[in-house]
Amino acid sequence: MTAPNPQSLRIAMIGTRGVPARYGGFETAIEEVGRRLADRGHRVLVYSRNPDASTPLPRTYRGMRVVELPAMRRRSLETLSHTGASITHLLSRIHPDVAFVFNSANSLFLPALRAARIPVATHVDGLEWKRGKWGPTGQRYYRAAEAAAVRFSDALIADARGIADYYAQEFSAPTELIAYGAPQVAALTDRLGELDVSAREYHLVVARFEIENHVDVIVDGYTRSPARLPLVVVGSAPYADEYTRRIASLADARVRLLGGVWDQELLDQLYTGALVYYHGHSVGGTNPSLLRALGSGAAVDAFDVSFNREVLGGAGRYWTDADDVAALVASAEADPDAQIERGRRSRERARLYDWDEVADRYEALARRLAAQGPSRHRPSGRRAGVRA
Image 1 (tube, rainbow, N blue to C red):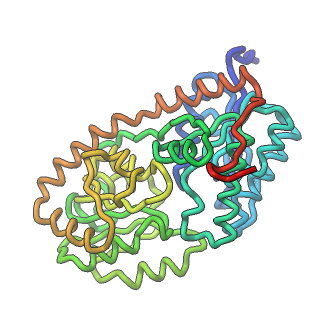
Image 2 (cartoon, rainbow, N blue to C red; image 1 turned 90 degrees about the vertical axis):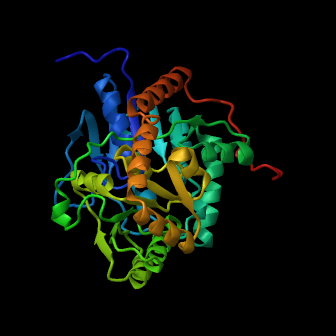
């Protein structure tokens, strides 16, 4: 039996759907960072929930240990119920050197980790209380959860400058600015025939069907345009039937609603072959779909918000409403060669986002927290201008 590396850390990753990554940014980050940390000799434990209960998750995945636990299948309780089960399992069996908790919504469990003297860094995600799927109660909860994350975490992680600025302004709280990495996707399009499309002969949207991702605005703008090329829409969302119906009602015969595409190779080819990728995300910080589009060499037209401008810079074009989208669609079809050139700029931009460097920063943070232990002095969690 091989002795453990004395320089290795026991690292727990909690609060997401876990691995294998099938859903969103957090899961992608855990898989990409976790496997690199495991390759470096660290013992990485990932708590996961399973969308297909008939097929158990692997107990190890890309060097990481996977613990599969159940969750309540309700939008407001799914994440919290799974995180609660994960924390209970962790405290009853394992004492990691450091825990990474993803999503500020999970901050109600942070006092339990502090009581066990487990150093914890919370990846706060985006401005969740702005998401359209949450009513007033959910919005109040997320606002309170942000404050709890500030108060009870030993470090906060933000994946975009806009999120870091928000926590500095609202709470006078420092953050570790660690963006996601961008994949370098091979320029292949040989499988597009499976979806009856050809390279540079379609527009593309890839997004969860949530209001703040503006899929309806993109579809509305596209159908107002004189486009001759189809719009391919990849995405869906649990608990979003009404919004899904709205998107379908705005579509015309040129719009192809594919639902989810879980074959990553085929999805990558959709990005690579698109004339333009339209990105409507507005509240979530640095978005992995946008980074994948850059790494695939897609020309990108994005919703005009600071997070998207931070990632795209001059490689992107920007829109705010359906009329803007209609004009950009028409412009792209009028000059397809310009979109190919913009795609080259996208690949250059993607090189700024490197997963190895991201893993370096997570590793450095984990070592620092493990060495110092739980901090005694943290910001209060009070918002600027709010008295105690």
